[in-house]
Image 1 (spheres, rainbow, N blue to C red):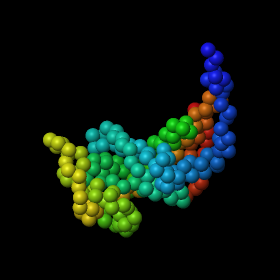
Image 2: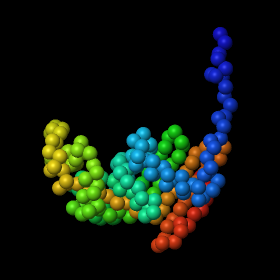
Image 3: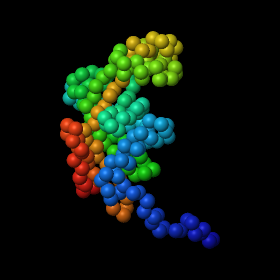
Image 4: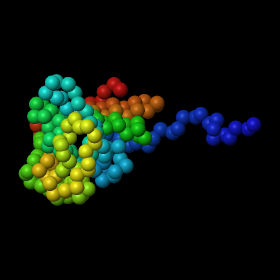
Length: 207
């Protein structure tokens, strides 16, 4: 039986034409572009980053969240949460978080280290709530609070107006960004560190 040539072709695919793979400024610009895309594109891997915090018992906790807004000027990411959730206790203990995104299609990982400010009942929270969907508002009206042990799954909440009392916005301002792009012809890894208002310290790292 003759095997189609497409099934026996084991040649390596051409190197992706990534203009940012050898230039640190372009790497950072691409990272920022991907976070901005994550806000607008539900299919983007950057839409749902993993957020890690440290609990009061000094153990790490990680969860997936939805990126709602990104401001490249202030390096700030906004995410929504229930103020009754355990992550709020974590952040009251240590107001920092690690962020991890992995895009499997691009073989690209980005990690951030960020300071976190929690917004409740303030203009930031009010603006986020006003721009949110009704279906999302209902989620914050769930009772009992998230993480409570129950005998059976509770019924879905229905009162969207009651949710704002439990709504919070997490504002993550990162001061470190690490980029890792995997490629069989040569990986690329870089780190960017911001101090005060100065431009970031940028350097290549061994992958």
